[in-house]
Length: 211
Image (tube, rainbow, N blue to C red; front, side, top):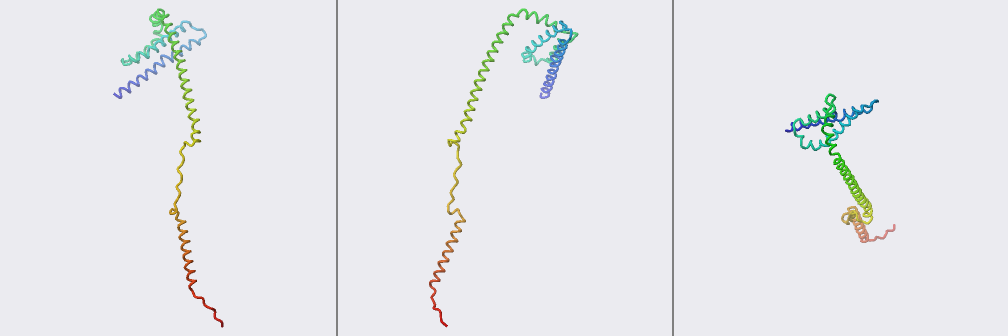
């Protein structure tokens, strides 16, 4: 099933590119050559105008047709053959399709088609204006919200809302070993001096002897 899906996608991509080349690129180049001739052939220009009218109609209907008809076998091949049939010099199916099918239908319903197109144009314009107003209002609202948010940030810091660092703990006297050692040395030296003084006071005083 996986290989079938890959093969189908490759085939569809190939025929899509082929339709772009033989249905749009090559006819556009030929139309350009016809327009740029020194002696313009009216019939040739008319042929290419009819071709692009048919292609425009096919492009519009193609979006709907691909949804319901793309599962048919050789659907891409038929579409490619139809594009080539329209401009190929030996067939030139553009004139046949335009004169026998398209022109009678459009001529018969030209008024209705023009009215429908005008209604669609008006509705699309109103929708575009409505959508533009909504987008601008939403954009302005989001812009002012973002601006208010950025403006309020410095105020929060100055008012003290920002959490401060915890205070450093005060060390107790027992946690200072150097001071304790100094105190112990000082007390030991003072006790030693006091004991020496006591010994000096208990010694008897002797009178010096005269020779």
